[in-house]
Image (cartoon, rainbow, N blue to C red; front, side, top):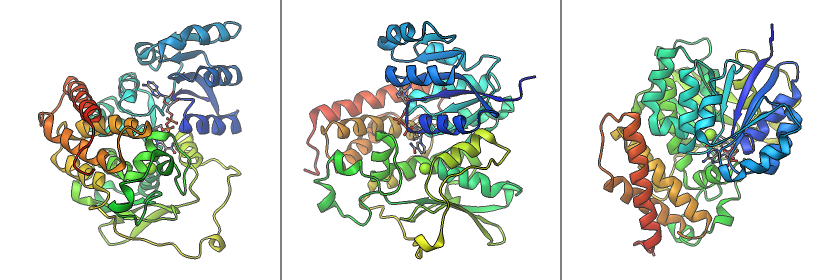
Length: 392
Ligand code: NAD
Ligand code: MG
C-alpha cells in the first residue's frame, strides 16, 4: 500500500504553493505530488511538474494551456485547462490531501469539490471561509472532512487547541504585525503607493495579501476565518497588534489560562504542520532566539485609521452575504491599487460604498454568494472607473 500522502497543490506557483513544494521536497518519503495547479505562470508550473512528476497539471488560465501541454508532452502528467477541470481532478481517488493556496474567491469551488469528495483540506485560501464560511464548514462536518488551517494565526490557534475541549475557550486573540504603515495616520496614508505597501516588515507573500496586511483587511478576513474554523461567537474574537510576529495567536480558556504558539515568522512551519498533521516533523528551519528579540510588544489596533478592520468587523457581525460582498469589493480595489488606479484610503471608501449598495441576504446559498460576488465586483469596478472619492 502507498503510505505517502498524495497531495493536490492548488496555486502551486504562488507564495504558499512554492513553499509547500519546498516542504514536500524536504520529505520525499512522506509526500507525493498528485496534482499541481496554477493560473497563468506557465513557465514555473512546467518547471514544477518536471521536478515533482504529478499525475495531473491544471492551468486555469486557458490561454496558457497549449504551452503547458506541449512542454509536458514527454512526461506522464495529464494536462487540463480551466476551473471545471480543477474541481474535477481534486476529487480523484488518488488524492488524499488538498492544499488550497489559490488567492481570492477563485479558490472556493475547488475546495468545495474536494470537501464533497471527502478529501482532507489544508487551507491557506482564507477567502473561501470569508465568502461562504457557514456553507463550507457545514458541508465539511457532514462529510467528516477535516479542515486544517495554514494561515499562521489559525495554525497557532489550532495547535493551542490540541488536547483541549473547544467548549472551554473563552476568547482568542489574533495577532497582527500592523504591516508597513503601523502607527501612521491618514495624512501619511493618503499619499502611499503600491510600491510602499508591498514592503512588508516580517513576511514575504503574494501581492494581494501583502496589500491586505498593509490595510489590516487581512486581519479582518482572518477574524471571519477564525469564526468559522473554530465555531466562535463574534465577541470571542479579538485583534492585538504585535509588530514582531513571534506570537502567532493566543487562546484564553474559561479559567483565564492563556496558551500561545510562538516561532519565527516562516510560513513553511504552518504549511508543514498542516500537510503532516497529526505528525510533527523535524526540520532545519531557523530557530527563535530570545537574544534576537529582547522585547515583544502588544497594542490595540487603530480602527479609525485602518478602516478596513472596522468594516470587516461589521461584516462579521451582520453576517449573511456581507463578508462576501466586502471580500469581492476588496479584491477589486486591491487590484486597482496595485495598478495605481486608486489611492490607499480610497480602498476603504469603495469597499464601504459597495457594502451599502449590494442588497443584504441573511442566509445566502452558494448561488447567492456567487451572485453577491458578481454584483459587488461590478459595483466596485464602477467606483474605480469613476474614481475620485471624498478622501481626495
Ligand atoms: P500568490 O498570489 O502568491 O499565489 C496565488 C496562486 O493562486 C498562484 O499559484 C496563482 O497561479 C493561483 N491563482 C491566482 N488566481 C487564480 C485564479 N483566478 N484561478 C486559479 N488559480 C489562481 O498568493 P499567496 O500569497 O500564495 O496566497 C494564497 C492564499 O493563501 C491567499 O488566500 C492568502 O490569503 C493565503 N495566505 C497566504 C500567506 C502567505 O504568506 N503568502 C499567508 C497566509 C495565508
Ligand atoms: Mg495570517
